[in-house]
Image (tube, rainbow over all chains, first blue to last red; front, side, top):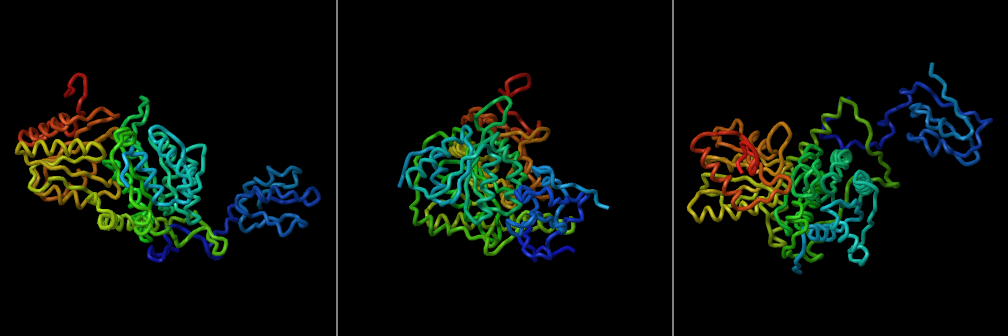
Length: 90
Length: 394
């Protein structure tokens, strides 16, 4: 929906959760973490360009936020233990 | 305090007095000494500022953008190929509405390799969204740096400014320059307080995607900011005069244009020579004046239209050529005057390209030719002044 220009900030600024674009629907392949192989190094968390790898605390396994993950596959590429599979979305 | 300094030194003083929190720059001839003087100021404890050494001009602009996004005033300087390498980030800075101020030393683009004065580098950045101010002398470089922050940071503008000085004619030539007191500059230029910035206590996301249903409105906001800037540049110029006693005429400086039959339009250091020639010609009884177009973006359409009234002919002197068209100042003036009831004859003169010396007699030749075509009719729209070869005028 078009927001009138006099109601806009000078440049697009995201400040409201409702305004965020749910980019998860763009995905063709989804990352799936195999906790058997995961060593909790959190390299996937460091590399994710969309902050879609969620780490609650250092003892937990990382999880993927599928509402925002675009399926770029960087996490799978960087994982030193090949613990992340990119599975085709159905 | 009065000092005899180069244009680059004046630019460094202008930056220092504006108290930026971050300066990121990469050295390139003939801009290098700007960065060196700033490094000296910081090393000597005269300027409290983070100087970020970067690996390229693209990174320099990126660092300034990041700094501004955290709510910190930033400054940079570049020239020619360095400015070209910034191109992508110049666009980002403008549309992200970050009021960065930079000094560009106008230098020819290679090949052929050249380090001399030419306006192609900044003209090629015309559509990046940066305001462009072409300075004539070293004092104007210093003063315009301070004024540019005032204009750019206005909450109803928020657009970056690029001021330019001609390579060597200003960058490396010394002139007496008045260096204003820091207290007066602090009064004139309040600290930078943007409404939106990166702040952990009030988190915002910047640079998000906008769908086609709203992109147009964001561009319209920039157009409105430019309309406001046209007025604000004039207002700030007047306020500057009240505090510091110097004024530059806002968008266009009118020099002996009253009752003029012929008008020469110039920019940058070409205008100093033109000013001298106008004085000579006036002494000889010729009715000629000069319009120095200081601000190229926003383009002073209304001023140009007002100046053209009652004038027989206008000679537009350009220090660069736009491939496949004309000189850039000529093209703008031509567009501004089309549709006006009173339209003087207009001719474009390319003078001083690539640092070719511009002597008073060159400007006299331009004037003589302008009077001739005004009486006999236009021979060609654009002249390569000083061209050596078949058909050349040299």
